[in-house]
Image 1 (cartoon, rainbow, N blue to C red):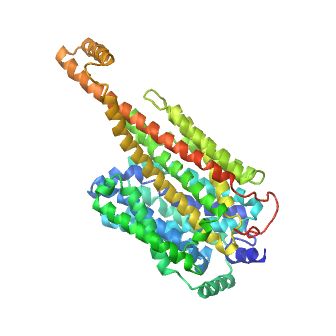
Image 2 (image 1 turned 180 degrees about the horizontal axis):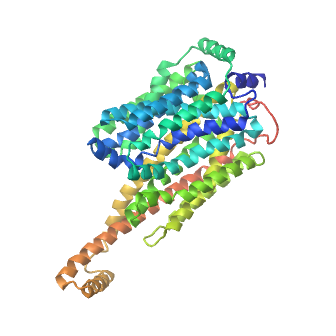
Image 3 (image 1 turned 135 degrees about the horizontal axis):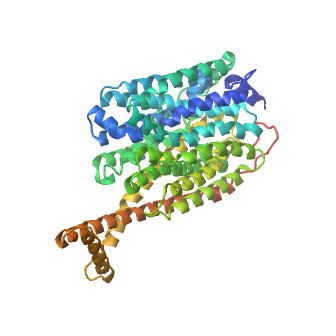
Length: 536
């Protein structure tokens, strides 16, 4: 308990500062960072046109950000302790804000990519430190409520990103997807500077301990960053570059495997590793890590592909496709505070199990997708998903700190956020590959029935020909129109069936983690206790 008090004095917002105010300003900054993981996605064609490059080249704007973000997540525990969380947080936020403005004024693709790398480095350090600040600010029995505000950033920001990005791009320009962070970032810096407290003596003590532990693990950092970065490139570029038929993807895969093979023994042998792999091997934290992978995958995969589905197959505009997510975002915001209240009364493992079951049900709803659905079918499915995800995200964050020593909270934050980001990339890549390959499969199966010897096919041709002739086409014109119409119908049906397969996989992935949730330890509810009272 003494260690926890000391840690809190060292880094957390304490003293006369209201912890709820701390939670608000920290969540506000984290919201900015998470928003930028998705805000530019819908603007990529406009970015490509504005800079005179292909959409494929412009897509590196997303990839470079995620790679830099992953690298910063790895290094944030060390620098959070070395500089003090307040100083490090403000530094990251300032870098993120300045790089955002630079992105907005980029004059070519090279300048934009460099600015996105800097933006990713600044953003990657903010989110794990945000969680650490909240973990130290709130007593254990109130952490769930404190994390509720942070949870709004994690769940709602990826939903708002495409909507805001589409609106800014259509009404202003793609530059404003980045420039909007300028004034918002300055306000956030001022709020954080005036709200957070930091003990200089405690920071000096933390530096002394870091020196004793061996300082910055440069080799470990390079190995972990290389592994995560190359994995991110594989997941993000694999389908675009035709996976292992591409020499580039093969090279990246070899680098990824080598980095992982060297990383594991190196990190396990360090006294103060860059990431504590033993933490991932524990029942409590390891289960939280895997569940967060699945939850992050479901959130970002559906956030990206649901708008894509309604735009391509139902003719929605980018704005209306984004609005499908809006009711779910409102539900998620309300659920955050409901879950914050429940977390002090119900064991996290039960909340997580219920949440994953609801997430699986929302995916099951989407397996009924076909061509005659309206706006509210998709909006309601998203609202159901938004009931379940907060029941997963908040208890997972709270449960992941159970049994973690105070000096390891930064490590826990970095790992859990790496799981969310990596899970999101895995979910997007998995869904994209399922849709692409299963669409080809279903198309080939459906075409087998489009033959003149098939009685149903003959009847369909006659009915459709009669329709086109009745609309004024000649028999010869009607015959060509029938062939084109049948081709379109086969392609559309194949696409729907591919999405159905993807939603089934996401549903099964959610169901698979329920046993892991039930394996989590019970945590004392409503009582004050030390963060390290249950060794991992």
